[in-house]
Amino acid sequence: RALRGVPGVTAVAERAMAFALVSVGDLSYGAQVMGIDPEKEPSVSSLANRVVEGRYIEGPDDALMGSVMAHNLGIGVNDEFIVLGSRLDGSVAALSLRVAGIVDSGSAELDRALVQVQLAAFQDEFGLGVQVHVVVSRVNDFEHVDALLPSVEAAMAPLGTGVVVLPWQRLMPEIAQTMQLKRAGSLVMLSLIALLVTFSVFNSFMMTVFERTREFGMLLAIGMRPAGIIGVLQIEAAWLALLGVCVGLALGAAVVSAIHQVGIPLGQMAGEIAHRYQLPDRIYPSLNVGAMVLAPLLMLIATQVAALIPALRIRKLVPVDALRAEA
Image (cartoon, rainbow, N blue to C red; front, side, top):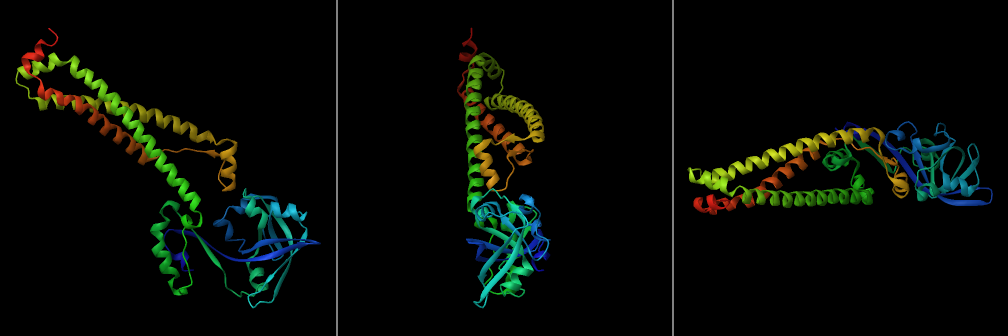
């Protein structure tokens, strides 16, 4: 209840977990048995959409089983199995369940061990009463979870010092590191492009300064200051950069908008990794205002710097010598 009142939190679900033996006949395998609320769990987890056989949990005797475990046990939908574990007081907990559905999460480790049951049945058989082990919350913006941590921790404070609040970055550090690596790679690529543009513009304006030496000499001879000529060149560079930026933004927006409809296939290897983390097998790019502002701004700055360096040569021009340069 406290978490649902935190601004930015859109969904909350409770879970109880235990490690137990799942048995069918003479076969027994270790499993992570998870008690979930079938009504609340789909709002924080996509496993409900990964059911490949049967249906999701509805009654107290229903169970959702990982595809690898179901294969190892040799059972299917509507088959019965036994769960043996340890109650909170140390006695034996036993559940007789029926496979309501089989889930394929894409992660072999999870599918090999996962068994989900109704939370009330789990609490009753394992002697938890109304207690749970984990409260999962979903927020409206996954990139700004850190900003919500103080509010979440304040909401959890009345429960005592045993409560630990963990953002998704700590629960799945490999995903967070991959995103950081992607951002760093994009920044490096953008910097390399800016460097290439800088050298290209530098070369063009260096040739411009040499080819227009007589023109600059005439302007100096009639009284125009070197700073004014340099300013004119900077304005020229700015207009050229703005023209290129406008054309680039128009073409880029058109291409991204078109690709957004069909997506970009990730390929077999990347598709398997995406499936493991329950991600789509295609990337659907969308227009990003930040990128559409940052990249053009970087190009404008790079163009101005590249044009300024050769333009500074004008300060050393002698009008008489400059007028004779192309005589």
